[in-house]
Structures are given as C-alpha cells and as structure tokens.
Image (cartoon, rainbow, N blue to C red; front, side):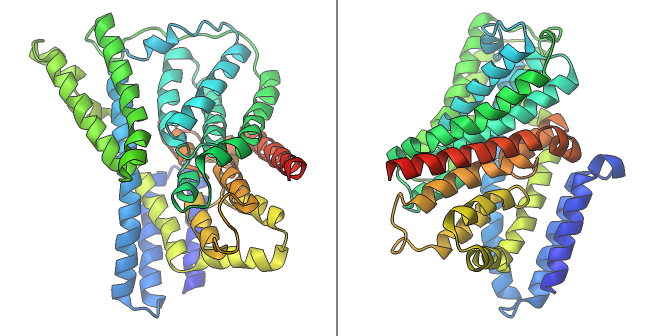
Length: 426
C-alpha cells in the first residue's frame, strides 16, 4: 500500500508538470493526490484510522497556517496594487536596459526576502513586475529570476525561509552565526545566475500602459499611505513572531485587519462605487484562489509522505549510502527541488540530535543553505516557486528548461563557496 502511495505521488507530480499539454488544472490533480494518498495511508497504517486522523489534523493545521499566511499576503499586495502603491517603487526604477533591470530586481528581491520571507517577497515582486514589463514572456523570465533571488535571500536570514526559521526555533542555529556563515554562499547563489542571464537578455525595457488597475483615481497621499502601510504590515509579521513567538499567520491576519480598518476610514466619505473598488473586500475577490487550492493539495500530499515515514526513511537511507555529511546535505538540497523542503529538514533535525551536533554546527548551517536554495531548481520545489507558478501561470517544463539550469549552477556555486569558506575558517 505504501508503494501505491508513492506511485500516486509520482503520477500526480507528472500530471502537474504536464498541466498545459494535458489541459488539466494542477489544483484538481493536487487535491486528488492528497485525498488518495491519505486514504491509502489510513488503510495501510498499523496505527489505525484514529491515529492517522490525528496526524492528518496536525498536518492540516500546518498547511492551514501557510495558506492563511498566503491569503493575507496576497490580499495586502492586491489592495496596495489597487491604490497604485507600487508606483512608489516603479517611479524610482529608471532602468532602460533589460540587463540593468535584471540586476536591480535581483538585489531588491534578495534583501527584501531576508526581511520578509521568500514567498511574500515573490508575491510582492511579481505584482511589481506587472507595472514594469509589458511583454508576458519577459515577465515570466523575471519571475523565475525572482524565485532564485528570493530563495537565496531567505536562506541566510532566520526570518527569510521556513526551513531556516525551523532550524532557528529548534535551536540548531543562531541569528548572528547563520547570517555570517551563509551570506556569501547566498550572494553567489544569486549572482551566478544573474551573470549568466545578463548574456541572455537583450533590448530595452518596455513598460505597460498605465491603467491604474482600477477605474478609481487615487491621490499621491493615498498611494504613499497604502504602500507604506502594506509593506509595514508585511515587515510587521516577522517582528510579531520574534516578540510573541506566535505563528506568522496570526501576525498577517492582525496586520490585514489593521490595513482593512485604515482603508475603511480613508475612503469612508467617497461615493459608494469608488469605496467598493478600493476596499480589502474587493481585493479578496481578486486574489487567485485556484493557486491557494493548489497549495492546500500539494502540501497535504507531501505531508502524507512525511506522516507515513517515507521521507524520514529516505533521509536515513542517504545517511547509510553516502556517509559524507557534505554530500548528504547537498543531495537533500537537490531532493528538496522535487518534494517540499519542510519535511526534509524536519526529518534531518530528527536524524541528527543536538547532543551529537550542537548549535551552529557545520551540518545545520549548510543544511539551511542547501534546503533553502535547492528548491529553486524546479518550480514546485519551494513556496516561492509555487507562488510564482500560480501568479504568472508558469509552465513546469518551461521553468525546468530556462530557469532550472541557472538555479542549479547557482546552487552548486554557492555550496562550493560555503565549503571553501568553512575549511578556511575552521
């Protein structure tokens, strides 16, 4: 039965990858995979259906936390966009050549991801690119670069990536050491793809015609207020988590409520039609719920592999077969491009106890880098990639062909740089 579970995952994974040729929505496939895999696991598990239900409830809570966060972030971005808030940034980006824009977007994404997180940063930057580039193919290419830069930026910050946060909360890493140890590798992970991509891009930047996104004109004060309120709400989330130790989704929901209240007060004296166009209620109707549903399905499907012990077993098999710690962590990073890096890191944390591998050991720092950036190699290998896939309708094989090799070269370059740095300093 466990073999059937793995077969279903592989088949559904292939169907998701072939979404556009097959013309089958990936959200439907992900939901079917999740339902079938958990059902088979419940039949096969010696623990009984009640124990499996308990595991499913636990995994659903983890999935819901990510989904609530995603909905909150997407809504904040939408309402900021509706007010023309992104003009605050786009009006200051004066790049006329594609290569110049590439480097500007890459560095903004890299450092913004360290402050926010890779998924939220991808959502923000994808919305920003719609204001900067008219051509859809160019915008999709930039979305791929944004995924690489967001994952690289998130790897060296405790707040920038879920897996790094897991290691930080678990006591495997400390803030100062992870920033010091992984920063150079993360920069190289981003810069190598940017250098290669610079030779691939030619021509000048062609911006889209300004449509205001809504029929209602907003004042410069309203644009500035909602932009800084929106970005402030997103930055507030990691601060809220650090101070209260409560889950990030609660912080994003609190921030969303505050932004909603400010919007209501700001527009309460406007005509009813204008008021409706600028509220968060309207923004909620504009977010891509199909992508949210896909997120639910794929996370639950991968969670079943973790619950039934297949992912921890894979980690142990790697430990036996490979032996070398550096090689094991590099492989874990590569595997995270295929399956979610969260259960892989969780399995690794269980395999290597703190008593044997203390805080800030080599394995934890290198794992933070590899698990954080390896997911860039495939579009569904990271939360940032899945978000970009939904927002820009990126095809799996297009990404694997055009962006995947860049991400792989960057990943291996950064890994090599970290290993050299570690040997020089230790």
